[in-house]
Amino acid sequence: MKRLLIVTLLLWVACKSPQPGTSRTASLPGHGAISIQVVPNPIVARPAGGNAYDFPLDVIVHETGGRAVTVSRVRATVYGPAGVRLGDQTWDAAQIASGGFATNLPGNGELRYHFVPRQSVPDTRLFGSVHADLRVDAYDETGAPASATTTVTITR
Image 1: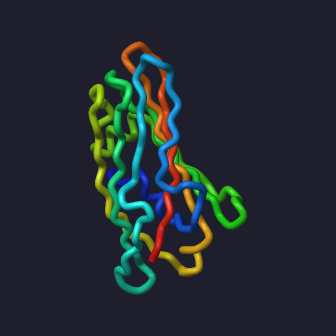
Image 2 (image 1 turned 90 degrees about the vertical axis):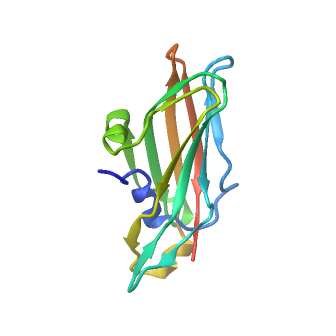
C-alpha cells in the first residue's frame, strides 16, 4: 500500500491544463487551512527501459491558517482528451497512515511526501492528452473543514 498515494494520479497525467501547479483552497476564516504543491510540476517522466517511465515528485501539504490540521482524505481524478474523466481514486486517513505517511500537520507546518513511481506507458502520445487534479481534505481541532486542489501535468 506504501506509495499508492499519487501513483494512480501519475499513470496518465500529461497535458496542459488551466494554471498548472496553482493550489486552490477552501477553508473557514479563523480556522485551519491547507495548500498543496507538486514539485516539479510539470513532472518530468524519465525513461526506465522499454515502455517503463519513472515519475519522481514531491507532494507538499502546507498548513496556512495557523492551526493544526489532520488530513482526512486524498483524491486523484484523471482526465483525458477533451476533459473526459478517465477515473479516480480516493484514500482515507487510515489508508494514508497505513502507507507510512503522517496525517497530522502542525499549524503553519508542512508535510512532504517523496515518490518515484514507475509505470508502463504503452503509447507516448498520452504525454500530450491527459492531466489530473489532486484534492486533499483536512479538518482542524474544532472540526472545521479545509481542502486544497491542484492540477498536475507531465512532460517527457
